[in-house]
Length: 308
Image 1 (spheres, one colour):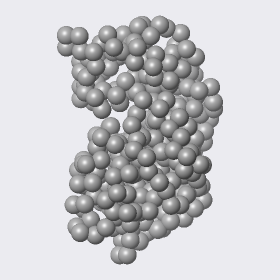
Image 2 (image 1 turned 120 degrees about the vertical axis):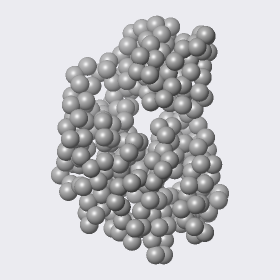
Image 3 (image 1 turned 135 degrees about the vertical axis):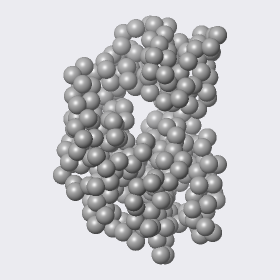
Image 4 (image 1 turned 180 degrees about the vertical axis):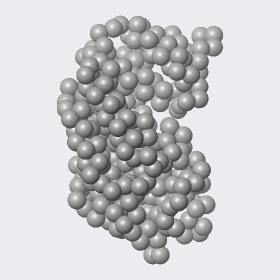
């Protein structure tokens, strides 16, 4: 949750969070303050504390969301209640948020929490916005999420990449789990990023980084691997979703996992469409995978969260 040690414009702060919450980027301009992405619901008190301390008595004027997965907007409601700030979301999500359709917004399907929030305006590909007295471009970045945006500052050569590009990969390509196209869109997004003059990437998760070309190469290699056999993307999604739930709840009874998998629409859909295993077999496979990676451990009849 600490500020990055990399050189940033004076008006920017980056809060690197644990993987349950997305990173937050705070802009403190002369006349306006803004926060890009607000983390997960259960981390909202930490988000409020980080923002409040960094603002030093100023109010938060705006929230901007790159996309509306629960780990990127789960703090919206708490920030709105504290500061009365306006909120900008991707334009394609406006009707879902207005109706608070938890199914369409993926919260019910993933078994994740998000307190209801409102919005004041929308953003789409090609829009320009001022953040921290700097001009930023909103760019469409489908793949991980069909409606995700990334933000690029040409004058500072900084990219806020959300889950489209991390130092070592990118977020789960969720559309492919539902039989929709996602790999091609993710490839186009990486190609778009490759056209930008970028010195520093602030990803949605993990530390900011400067080795942009190398990160793009790793991401493309991983995308090739996933696209070659969609089962790999489905298996990755199951592991990621179980790890996310472990980060939130810290432990599960091992014998509860098969029923939990069956009750989770995303995991159950991936199991039926791609993995062709029983819920018991898939749960055991996922547990072994996380334990082998050091991301979880068995203790008696429990699966306990482990450090990433």
